[in-house]
Image (tube, rainbow, N blue to C red; front, side, top):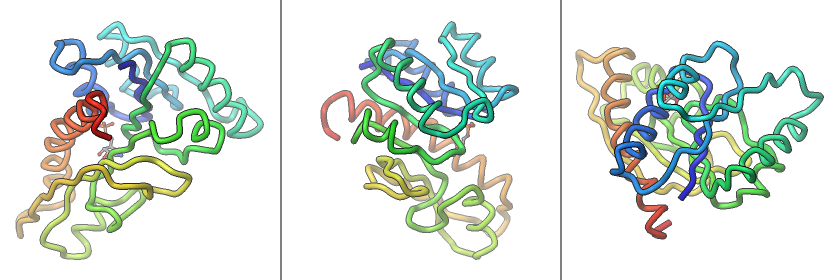
Amino acid sequence: TNIAVFASGSGSNFDAIAQEATAGRLPCQVKVLVCDRENAPVKEKAEALGIPVFSFRPRDYEQKADFEAEIVQVLKEAEVDLIALAGYMRLVGPTLLKAYEGRIMNIHPSLLPAFPGKHAVEQAIEANVKVTGVTVHLVDEGMDTGPIIEQEVVRIQATDDAQSLQKKIQQIEHRLYPAVIQQFVEGEI
Ligand code: GRF
């Protein structure tokens, strides 16, 4: 299975997936990193692992359909079967959704449908909930909507703040995302 990871940020999930694949523990290949931010640290992680990067600036295009058509071209050339969004801070549009229907996943730092959007960890702290977690789901046109594939719970302790909670969540993400990708490879999704 050939994977493309889309990421705009620090890339710890990208790294977790790519390391598992490179070590042969995940029977797939990360063929390309797609990145929409010039200075994203994730790009250095890809370069260190020798994974090609497709980097683009959304403002260079008139509309989303234009850069997504270019992305689809890159993915086809790399014979990508599965897209894993990992901190790609952008809604996927119809061009990409149609080309990869049912084959785009996202990881989100809450138990969806609670706390969608960019501030899920802070919002869980503010809401004083006692449990939150991690969700991996298939992507549709909505923000953090789409069929849920897997979830894992994290208990919030009285001593937790957004930073410590984020750390616990990310540890789970780095294990859960490769495991769900494995399920996809085995045809279970
Ligand atoms: C993760 O927490 C993920 O749940 C969210 O974005 C974050 C990306 O972190 N969608 P990283 O760049 O993989 O470290």
